[in-house]
Every structure is written in structure tokens, then in C-alpha cells.
Length: 242
Image (cartoon, rainbow, N blue to C red; front, side, top):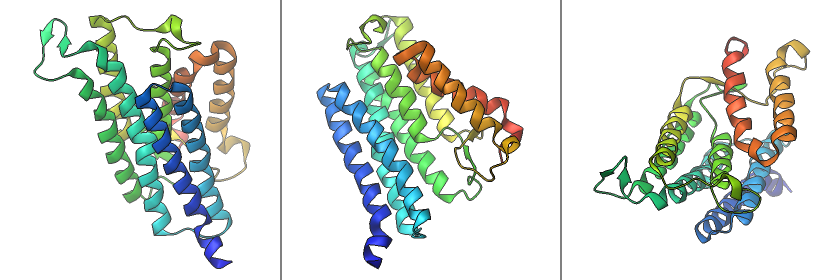
């Protein structure tokens, strides 16, 4: 019984890793729907492994390290692959300049900085009730949401990018900005409650209500917009995050 109690959270974390592996594979194969399902499943499992560990008082250093290793695949490899596939059609040309390498490999900068962000998070003892920098699950939602909007796949076909200089610059700037946000010093809202007092949870309520409204108004297009809103609302409430 103690074995199950001590390892249930780790089993959930391994489920997150498995889901991430399947999602990455299907992203390579062009099966966007399966990848989206795997990302959602990984998000759920990533939340519940910590919840179960705390509920069963089974927190451990092994669980912490395992969680980051699983997140590296689900929320590090997948967004890097998504940006790789978005940049793939542009070859090695940017603004008429021929680069000595294919620009698509630049997308893996997101994967590298996701790894760096997870390592920093493991060593940082301050991020109990807030995140410092954009967390990897949110970054994955942002990048994969953009990926869906730029892919000729129902219901997103009307948003597909044309192969032009403006499009590649937008994607390159998004890659750089996303990578920086992962390791930035900006405090971000975390859905972790220090108390149940209303005044202590205004940022979380603003985030939740705003996210729901964005989805209602913009439907699927609202997926990446929610993360942009999350960043903006976190900037507004910087002084209240501690």
C-alpha cells in the first residue's frame, strides 16, 4: 500500500511523458488533432501529479526531477517541433538573403530555452505562489495555438500564412520572444492559492474570467490570445504577485 501511495504521483508524471511522446510523434506525422489531445492530456496529468503528491504527502526529489523531465518532452519538444514545422516552408531565405542553413532549425531555440527554464525552476525556491517567466505549459499552448492557425487544417484554414518575408519574420520574432519569456524575470500568475481571501486572488480571478471571455468571443482563435492576455494581466498585477 505504501508503495502505491509513494509512487502514484510518479506514475501520473510518467503518463504525462507518454502523452508527450505520442503527441510529438503525431505532430511529425501531421496529425494535429491527436497532438492537441495529447497536449491537453499532458496538461491535466501535469496538474494532477503535483496535486496527488501533496494530497498523499508523497512529495520527493525524485518526483520533482521526474516532473521536469516529462515536461521537457510534453512542453519543450512539442513547441519546438511546432515552430520547426511552421518555418519549414521558408527554406533558408530571409528577406531575400540566403542563409547557409535551413531556417526551420531556428524553431528548436524554443526547446533549448524550455530546458533552461525547467532547470532554473528546479533550483529556484521563490516560485511557490507565482512563476518567474512564462511556464512551459503556457508557452506550449501559445506556440501550438499559433501553429494550428497557420496550418491548412479545419477549422483553421482561413488563417494559414502565405510564404512571404512578413510571415517568416513574425515567426522568427515569436520564437525569440517566446524563448526570452521562458527565462525572463517577469512574475507570472500561478493558480496556487496562498489564502482564500478575495483580495489575495484578484489576479487569478481576472485571468480566469478574461480567459473564458476570450474563448467565448474568439472561439479557437482565442487559444494563443489567452496566453497573450495571461502575460499582459501578469504585468498589470506584478506588485501583487509574491
